[in-house]
Length: 349
Image 1 (tube, rainbow, N blue to C red):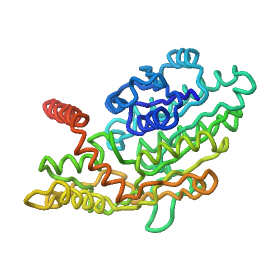
Image 2: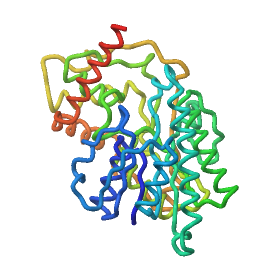
Image 3: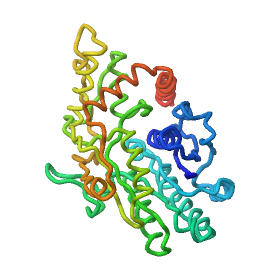
Image 4: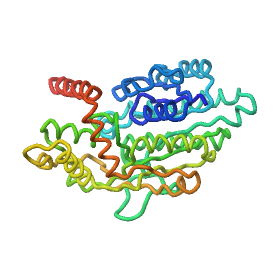
């Protein structure tokens, strides 16, 4: 298969590209604008493969998308390109509206026009996967799980823009008969995660002797999913999922933020010990606005209908993640340096 992967230089998108090329032998055509979240070094393992190609494209550029589809003639689209950082959406929502809503609309329209022009057998086989988040569902109480039938209740500009993209994909199915499927995932973690995200931030701050910041009292709960498990789930949904259906992807690994940080500290105490426990570096910071209390995914539909199951639990996944960051300073050090320089520039303004 030839598969267009939008946002393929991002955290999850690059895992998808590596899985398609290395594990499955398919062709991945990576469309990425290369914003701060896109980094081609995440694809070093496959950059020389004949089954991997890169196109620097903004999904808000309709003409560029038309050219890419005409050039590559894909069999499917996996749409992961998005502005995805909640904190950034709070301070600057415009980019989220533009990319996540307008960009998704453009991609749906280009894909639909391309699909309509395919031969009957190719048209029947074509699929479009819109990759979304559990944050569209809002916040859970102490009990219950997000199911595919859970009403949408987004509470940040980021989650509202992703909910809009989901509604667009669903409308293209209902209105045009377009062969789209939607996935909603829980929090991802693993190798190549941007250093500003919780788990890599804590790992790298701990190693640097810096504070380990936790919002509020650390009681917010997330369901953690190892990124390689997610990549495998997405291909399963693309190839086996029913048109017009939604599939929730979760690792069944609920943890409070404080539990996550403490677990990272405990592993580091074992593999990179120092005089004082890493947990001594934990600090509590003012909670962010609209911080959802709890997310938890019910992946039963995906597991029973399509046969996917997460291979990593949180303990095995976090150990693999920490080891990867310890062994791959070449990747994260330039990003961390750039972030520090950028922070200093903003302070000076």
